[in-house]
Structure formats: C-alpha cells, structure tokens
Image 1: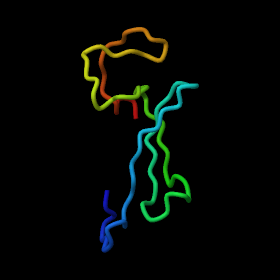
Image 2: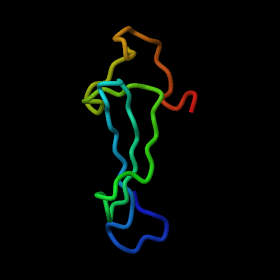
Image 3: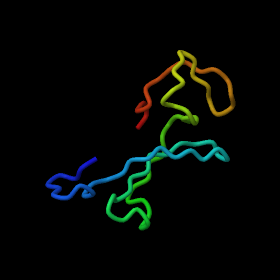
Length: 79
C-alpha cells in the first residue's frame, strides 16, 4: 500500500495477517516498506481468529477459537 505523496516504489506500508496459534488470535500488522526490520508501526488485534489458508478456504461455517461453530459476522464487528 503506497503512502500518500509517495515518490519511490518502496515508499509505503506492508500489511500482514499474523496468527498466534498459542492464544489463538489474529493481528493485522503494519510495517514500513523501507525498513521492515524496525518492526511494526501498528499492530491491531482482530476480533476473529483467521486460520492459515484464509485465501483459499471459503465456507459458510465459522469456527471459534474453541473449534465450535459460530454464526458468521463481519470481521469489523465490535471494532
């Protein structure tokens, strides 16, 4: 994602979905594309657990952290 007013190809942000299976919780992490080794400039805990393979596994069922089926809801609900 480019920063407003960007002039260089790497003048932007990298957005990553990060999964911590020990919690379990998912986070949206924002890194400066010019210096990813500096660590996140923002880290947002998501209200839903997003499992690995989210891009290729679409289903009408939603599983909670405990593995129990839940009603589908917006990922932004409650944010």
